[in-house]
Amino acid sequence: MSRPAPSARRDVVLLALLLAGCILLLSVQVRRSGGQTLAESWALDASAVLVRGVTGVREAGGALSGWLSFRSTLVRENARLHERVTALEAELLRLRDAERDRNHLLGLLGLYPTPPPGTRAAHVIVVSTAGPFQSAVLDRGRRDGVLPGGAVVGLKGLLGRVVAAGEASARVQLLSDRTAATGVLLSRTARAAVARGDGGAGATVLYVPAVADAAVGDEVVTSGTDGVYPRGLPVGRIESVGRAGLFLDLPVRLAADPRLEPLVFVFPPLLPGEARSPGEPLPVKP
Amino acid sequence: MSALATALGLVLATLGTLVMGALRLPSVPDLFLLPVGFAARRGAAGRAMVVAVAAGLLEDSLTVPGRLFGLHAFAKVLVAFCLALVGARTLVEKAVPFGALLAAGSAVEGAVVAGLLWVLRGDLFLPEPGRLAVRVVGTGLLAAAVRALLRYPWKEARAARRRRKLA
Image 1: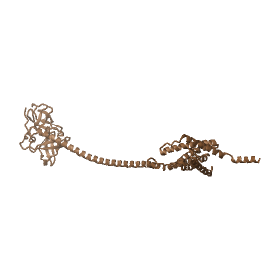
Image 2 (image 1 turned 30 degrees about the horizontal axis):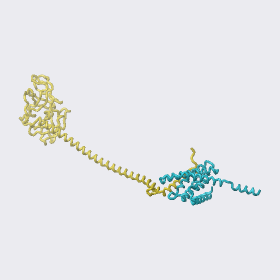
Image 3 (image 1 turned 180 degrees about the vertical axis):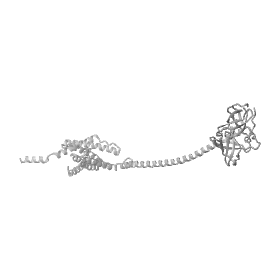
């Protein structure tokens, strides 16, 4: 396709200019029904586009500003809600802890309705059963009336005794410790014996003659003869019955697991000759 | 066609329009289209459009009631451009084709004016067919007559007449 000659292009340009001039000339004369000329009408139409554009930009700016403001408000609100949620979660955890402690205390009080005067409640904060010694740490110490020698009991039974007390914490020797020994009774037969920790999760009842009556599942309680523990505290149940020379081999599954006892009672140390906590019934021989 | 002839044509067209207006003729030929047609006959579009603007504005100043100054100028510029296009592609020498071309141009101009009025005023002012036909035919005949007069070899005819007298 050949390009138009310059003169033809010039003619077309001239045509367009002349026609546009005529239209412009006519538009400034012709009046519409509203009294305005066509040029005014066209100018208004053109300016309306501009006005609409400016209005649109202004509205968009307003919307953007509103959105930014709204977003800022939302961010602040979100941060505030985050803080509130965190506080509420902390409060919820605290309340759950308090409820758990309350239920635990109610259970302890159900098990020991009249604990001896000077009994303290304490949380088990550390349980060390991995090493050669089995011990736990309480969050109460001398300042709170927790003294060495006090028996530590949980919801399920005896846990051990306080062997050292600081101002705000105390160390407990668990029953399962190899160096821990407890005077016990086999509840069913009232047979007195000694229970010693096996260094694991249980203990072994010693010095029960081979001819004695012992059966799997027999309950083992403290006898109060060791001068450390009150009488009648649950220690555990016999797991199996075997013979070891002149005596029976009686491993015991301990009643209380320190890892499952977050809240415990710490009884005051027994006075010399005291073997029974006030209010604790003596185990009844069948 | 020289500028002087064009100016003369425009003056004559103005005078003719005034005369025919004074005679109150219901429909008159488009006298202002004649100089435009002569300017566009050889295909000179620029010149034809300039003449068309001048002719259209003159016609508007004489015939249009008001506030439509430029109406016929617009239409005549378009027609001039079309006539120039035709003139650039064909030889329009004889009177009859020239008259037919201007008659067509007159019709086109009428249509353009009607369309422009419709666009500008919102009303469709269609010309009466009879008057339009008279105007178109009259313009064509007048253009053909003027072309024939201008094309006639007056000098040769006079010389021949003189030779006949001498003989």
